[in-house]
Image 1 (cartoon, protein in one colour):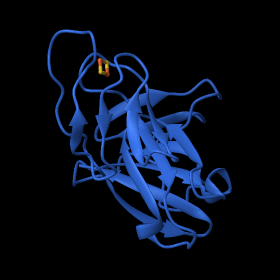
Image 2: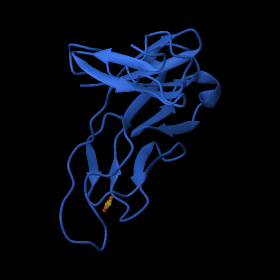
Image 3: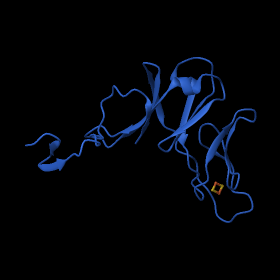
Length: 147
Ligand code: FES
């Protein structure tokens, strides 16, 4: 096998130098990477807590909306939900002053536990509760696990 080639489950992959295997270790540095640990089908998204320094701060990475709801550094001080509205794909944002997640397209609103507060405004169709992901904190990063 030549340098830059990888053998993955019997399939030979060639690398031109700019590629990397996408299955990262748990030691990712929190740059927003998505990993897919082998075996359990779960997908994780990690961001640095430096993006979430203050209550109300939020960041979106790889389909996950992270926001801070408490001043500590435990999982209960943060929420991680899907970042795209189930209705028609509007971007979701956390509105700290009001205490809800709001879609920027048709303004559906959701509790921080994902429950629908109100459906789409001036648009047909309904939405559903948001998926809320479990989180863990390590080495200055927060990781959401999508199952
Ligand atoms: S896309 Fe979010 S309410 Fe329509």
